[in-house]
Length: 344
Ligand SMILES: NC(=O)c1ccc[n+]([C@@H]2O[C@H](COP(=O)([O-])OP(=O)(O)OC[C@H]3O[C@@H](n4cnc5c(N)ncnc54)[C@H](OP(=O)(O)O)[C@@H]3O)[C@@H](O)[C@H]2O)c1
Image 1 (cartoon, helix red, strand yellow):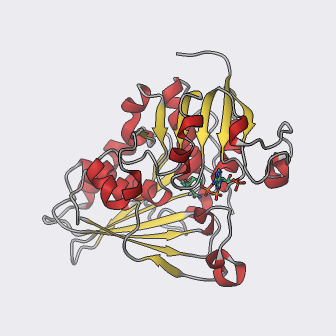
Image 2: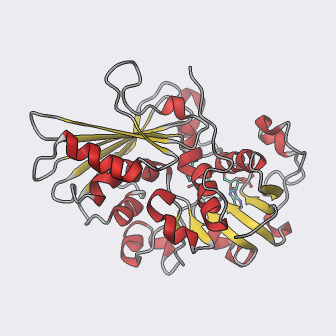
Image 3: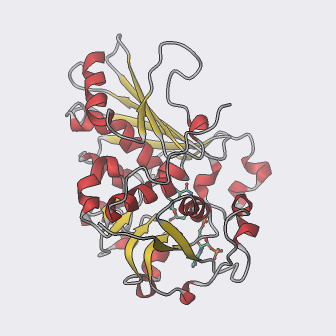
C-alpha cells in the first residue's frame, strides 16, 4: 500500500486516448499530472488541444526526450512507438500502463500470427481488471486492451468461463465510432468521406482477435470477427453470435453473467423487458468507464446473441488504464472513475 499523491506523465498526450487520460487524471484525488508529451505540439498549452481541460491547471506539452522519472507513466502512442522509445520509457516510472498493442499479447505464437513486428517483445499484464485483477495486483506494468477487444471479451467472458463456447463458431460484429481511429486524419476520416457512412473496414483480419483469443482461451478458428465504422464519434457496440453445440437456456445464461458480473463495479448486465434501452447502448456510456453486456437466445435455432457496449476512449482505453493503475497501486478500484454518463 502506498500513500500520498503519485505524479503522472502521459506520453502521447495530444491524442484522443491521451486527452481522456489527462481528463481522468485531473479528476483523481491521488494523482497529479506532471508532464504530458506531444512531438508536434511542444510548447503548446494542453487546453489548446483539449479544450475540455481549460479549467485544469495550465500546462504545456513537452517532448518525449524531456521526460524525467515519474511514479506513473501512461503511454498512448501509435502502434510500435512504445517499443521504439523503450530506452527512454522503460525504467522511467514505478508503474506503467501502455495503451497500445505492443505489450498486450503474451503468447509468442499468437503474437507472431497477428503482430510479426512485435517478435520477442516483453508482455505486460493484460489491463482488464475484470479478468486479470489478481495478476494486476502483483504487477507494475499493464497493457491496456484494444477497444473492440475489451467489448468483445467482456461480452463473451461469462460464456467462455462457463465452458459454453468453444464447441461451435462465434461470429462477432463490432460497430465502431470514428474516435477509435485516433486524432490524426487520413482520407478515410476526412468529413465528407466519413460522415454518414456505415463502412466495413475490417471484415476479416482485425488484429484484436489475437487478444480476444488469448484472454478467452479460445482455439484458433473459433472467433470470426468483423468491424464496421458507423456514424458515431465515441462508442463500440459488439454483437456476438454464438452457435453452441448443446443448447443453452436463459437461466444458464443469467447464472453465467451474474456469477461473473454481479460484483463488478464497471460492468452492468442490461436486459430490460420494456423501454427504449432494453440492451446495451453505447451512447449513454459516453465518457463513462462502464461496459454494458446483455444477451438473448433464439428459441428456434439455439443461437445465443451477446451484446456489449462501451466508450472506446474510456472503458476501451483511458478508463481501463486508470482502473488497472488503481489495482496495481492499491487504490480503491473505482477511484476517479465514477461518472454515470448522460441522458439524453
Ligand atoms: N482511440 C481509441 O479508441 C483507442 C482505444 C484503445 C487503445 N488505443 C491505443 O492507444 C494508442 C493511442 O491512440 P489514440 O487513438 O489516442 O491515437 P492518436 O489520437 O493518433 O494519438 C497518438 C499520440 O501519439 C503521438 N505520436 C504520433 N506519432 C508519434 C511518434 N512517431 N513519436 C512520438 N509520438 C507520436 C501523437 O502526438 P504528436 O503527433 O502530437 O506528436 C499523439 O499524442 C494507440 O496505440 C491505440 O491503439 C486507442
